Amino acid sequence: MSFSVAMLSVHTSPLDSPGSTRDAGGMNVYMRELANELGQQNIHVDIFTRWAHEDTPRIVQLSRNVRVIHIQAGPRASISKNDLYQYLPSFAQQVEEFRYSDANYYDLLHSHYWLSGVVGSRLAKCWRVPHVTMFHTLARLKQLAHPGEPEPQLRLETEQRLIQHVDRIIAATEEERMQMIRLCAASVSQVQIIPCGVDLKLFVPHKRQRARQQLDLHHPMLLFVGRLDPFKGADLLLQAAAMMEEDAEIVIVGGTLVGDSDLQKLQKLAEELRISHRVRFLGARPQPELPMLYSAADITVVPSYHESFGLVAVESLACGTPVVATRSGGLTKIVHHGETGYLVPRCPGFFAERLDTLLRDSNLRAHMQAAARPSVLQYSWRSVANSMHSVYKDVVSETRLAKAT
Image 1: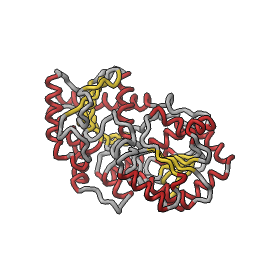
Image 2: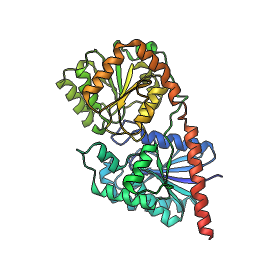
Image 3: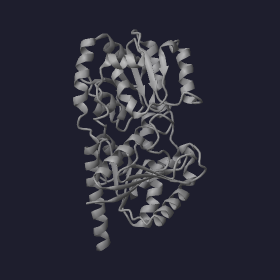
Image 4: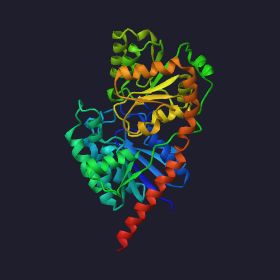
């Protein structure tokens, strides 16, 4: 069964490189790779995102059957996602106007993140089509993981309303599904588990020595990849590195090298900890460069407060590099403790201890390197797209049946 899907991502574009902004991360990769794989299955996908850059074309053909369509809602400039709610009615109206002018009919809507969910609910009602959503991170679960940073009440209330009205919710893990059911009153049949994926052709192991030579590295290396949002925990890695006995180089991939306040805070912290001489900030790097970085690293560190899935961990393991991560969320399913890395409480001392252990024991590290890639081979994007296609078929069939009766 072929479909035409309107995919919504108000606050961030699938064209943005992960880590390049505070809002660009695993979700951008997820949308882009899922849409591309669906396109290969003859599903037409239009991804609607806010037009944030003057020099970006209105329509970008991403791949076969997949377009990115930029919608004018608010100023054509970068805006914090916390300030976008006021522009959602305009965004929904502009999507409808594009659909009408382009003579398109969409079989369903697939929204990403709560802001897009609001737009999706409006359009689903107008178009009388089913609405599938993926929150990527629920505010309630985020708040439980990091009580010191309360989430906006608007987001909490809006996500709760969305859960009551969408046709399907995609959860990345069984744990996330159960939390949605227990804490947010989602119905058992409403939430379906589809894990995120990894490009197994791109993310492959490279010779570590060769990778290090290309990057001009001469010491054991710890790698952080991702947004520099404090929730992701790059600061904890620096604190752990300062406590370690082993003299490792820390490479941080994410952010921009000029005018990035989050990066500047990390640079200042490294100076205060007296480790700035062994911390390298590379800024956000394009996806094709990441496999060489993962391969060069002895260990990838994922010190987030919470991860719904843990895409960086999967990418690292696919490249044969062990992961030391917070014992939280989807990371507990991705990292096999003692086999492909370690899961630890979110505390610099625990991270420092495990990182020292792995760097000192070359045999243990070699064992984990050998086990890493086989542990994630089930997470192909084709598998993810096949599962999503099944969800689409179910909700479209249910809606058509309801209309007929």
